[in-house]
Image (cartoon, rainbow, N blue to C red; front, side, top):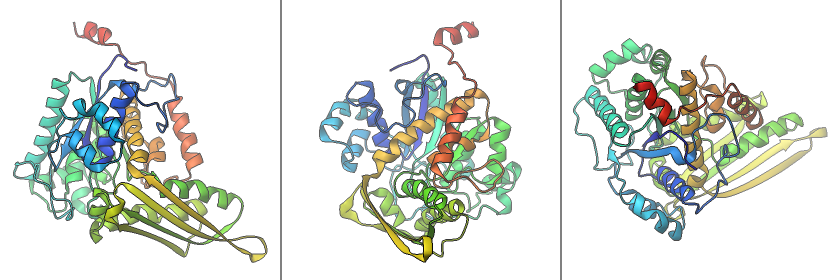
Length: 409
């Protein structure tokens, strides 16, 4: 399980369902209490990816419950699984998080950074990362945002145009800079890889993308592609290739976890729906007139999300047909493995010397980022082909701890 290096994974939203599932899942894997089902890159060999056992987790959250308590509250894993890793998770508590209720109204915790001003908050984030690296004797760190969804931000604002303009906006405590952007800025300012697994605006503004390129920071995002959108981007290419015209596609979700509670705020929900809206049109090559996406918070469902789709298609001789898809899933069970694989692939990109948007990681996201800001590829088969091609490039052999210490001598 374990290799030669230790890679820190700093998660924004460490106490949430996705993060606690990822941490618990990796502990179960280390102990031989689960296998690699659901981990998409477990079968990839000789690509230079760090071993799962070499990942070390920590991070920030607005709630300071230890991870054992948080994981039990989310009720994603079995009680026997939680009991097996409770001694480890019980010793882990999130760091105080940056917060701004103007950006996420429905998730308000009490573990908040005391720093006054945006620049001071960034410094607090950097101090946490530095302490994490030293305390855990880490070789490298990756930062991934799995926090609650923030409201939309106009990415075309002049203060987001260049790194210099963004710096000035930070110093002026600009009200348009949300917490997700603060974490992204802190990461890319030190060349640390950053992934945005949420629909929030983070590194996907021109200023931070250029900053990432200058500082050698690989970035990827945004909004993890897990359940309903995954199936949509698998089916749509098949319908296109068989010339079946999509007359309408109705999608609805119900979920009752903290993410659902955040999305119960119309502003946060707008961010989420925005990342799903353009997927079909991009794959099919025409606008689906009746593409409707609904997300409803339904408390009793907890983390057991239900997604339901009705697809109206027109075939040969104008004959109408329908597909009906009902997907009942634990969203965090789908999402947590992707977060783990993002940590491994972004770390690989950093060791390869790649910077800026890593377009080949688009398969993990609903709204993939592109290097030139152009239209992203959404089709799962094509995304997978690009990812495998990227992984099969000239490998970066991990430096052993002995070799690293010898080089420092």
